[in-house]
Amino acid sequence: MSELKVITNSACVISLTQMGKLELLHELFGTVTIPASVEAECRLQPANWMLVKNPSSPQLAMSLRSRLGNGESDAIALAVELTADRIILDDRRARSAAKSLGLNVIGTVAVLVAARRQGLIPNLSDALEELVETGFFVATDIIESALRAVGELDAQ
Image (cartoon, rainbow, N blue to C red; front, side, top):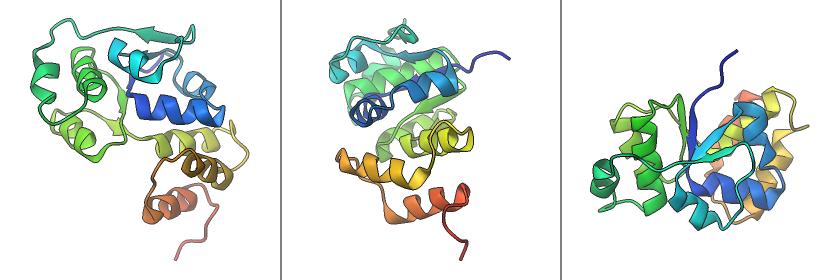
């Protein structure tokens, strides 16, 4: 099985680090690529399974910076350049920009859903509660949809 090419922005890395669950990214995706701007935002020493890489051509990132942060802009530009299989973004504007460029966007909640489906976490409800406790905002309808997706909430 070949590894997916996955790029992430800082929100997912920071939240999972605060939850003590950063390793989920590696367990789900293998190597995860982050731009240097995300490394700086996260203020972390990248794990050995994290690849720090900048877009080789900064034009797209520069054009995105008028409406997005540096990390988001660099992550999107890098995902386009590497034809990433997934990009992990949570900011609504960043997700919209990435989708408009044809990228397959997932968010931190989707990472937790995948972890639950693969048995890497015992239940999603507790993980989502931990995520919210880090200060991460998740709309109620997203929480309910995620819990339904893994059978932890009855369909209505």
